[in-house]
Image 1 (tube, rainbow over the protein chains, first blue to last red):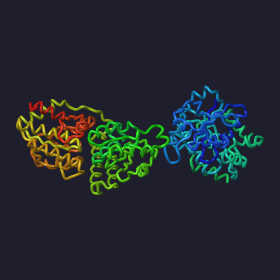
Image 2: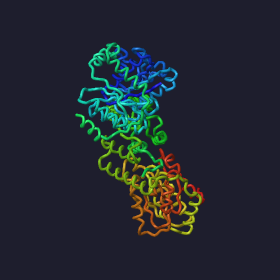
Image 3: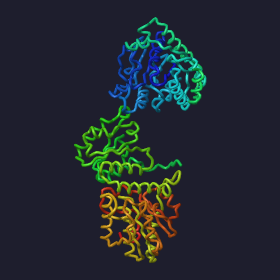
Image 4: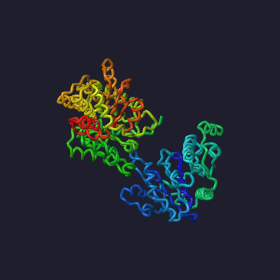
Length: 263
Length: 358
């Protein structure tokens, strides 16, 4: 079983990549569990025709904590969990993640024979709770989604700092392209700078947007589109990846130097 | 310096200060165990203390609705004139909007919020924040706030320089044996010596510490010797409740024909009243000082001295300061709640026993 967590700047496309990756891994015959850790509970929405599933924390409030009742089956047989959390501006979403992960229990995953578990974690590592999937020994390795833009790489570097502090291994970077000049080179050079690797990139593609409007993954709306092959490649790279290591975060100045040298 | 010794916390100080302000009900917005021990004692002193009993679920989803519900229940159950809502570590970390909850409960004219949690430094910060909220709510004026703030900051300074916050770790101690200290005092009186008793007590604990000058004076009447009585018992300074403490004790002394030779300040002025006491005594002749209450705030001079404290962790610093004997009144907080009279102290009882004046 491989357990990974996807981190990255808010709005960079973590949930799009996680959901498309999940369904394509499932289509290759893997048993996949996708765990959305965002209180907005929208990581798995595209596997249920745009509908939200009941969250672990909503069920927890009702006294329902049996793991079987917290997991829902989405498109292509992917098992899905949404952690859920408080409404915007109240409570503590970080604590919610920790409580939900504890409620799910790690032993349950082992019994269910999942091949891949993907945690889709919101935004940067803003507090201890958001670091939970990495820190509590749930994910074996972390993947950071970034574009080649400065703020996205800056956020990636902050996450790398968090992983360094927590002594957590990083599997690599998944590029989500925004179409800026020399974008792959920029991300690749940054990945090398922090002693990591660029796993693959997802080109900017309107089909992702069109699929999401219908509450679908690309595989469901455009089953024969080559974009699905790219997600399968990413999935294969992750499964075969055995060179994860704790990243070595760099400085803000160095990021500017890398990006400035590749304008 | 990171001090390892556990010390009183700002949340509890906020609760005690609400009591000083004669608030009817304190609502602690936090887990049910927060401030538990202090809450029980404060109930004995007439202020209701309730909790919103925040749970793990509240921690995640917020507990503003629960707070509104509790405020309404409190209003219905106790018909209070005034309610103080005190924060806790949990509610403040998750950023609860307490002010809005008070408005939404419809009780904004009788309830005010003290934004405090356990990680805000010295316990006196809790008292200062409470007084500031009380000032904003119109309970005290700016002059009174500034006077008390000054006292509280000086109290923190005393603890840092001379009290349990002086060292990295201070081990607790029960102090010297009460019988030995009591006999020493009695013998001084029998030898016709002159004892300066300085009552430098903090707020309601004065009801207990005043028993020691009372016992020494009673013993002096039997065995001779002389006593100079100095006390921070001004009835002119502080909140209504605080002045009442001083008034009660002075009435009690009067009934026992004990004259106070010098008033060194109010019962909330212990950080400076000790200095005033020593200043008063500087041209007097005496053989022994007995400093009771907050002796660490009484400047130590080259006269043989005995200190009586309420903190087992204050013993070591007081010994270091050069006191011949240090004794502890271990139950000072629990015995004085709800009283209007001087209550028996351990050393006072030992003196009475040694003097045969039970």
